Length: 53
Image (tube, rainbow, N blue to C red; front, side, top):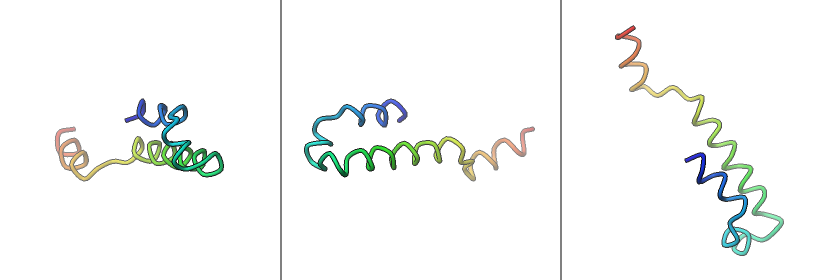
């Protein structure tokens, strides 16, 4: 997922479709979304690991 987000920065299709004024903001939003994902602890993780450790 991180590699996909990084690839957005050089994706000509995204820039052609969204334009030079919107595409960087879209990429920035996706980067932030990925960072949020990395620090999120899912209910499954809580259930599995809190009982184990």
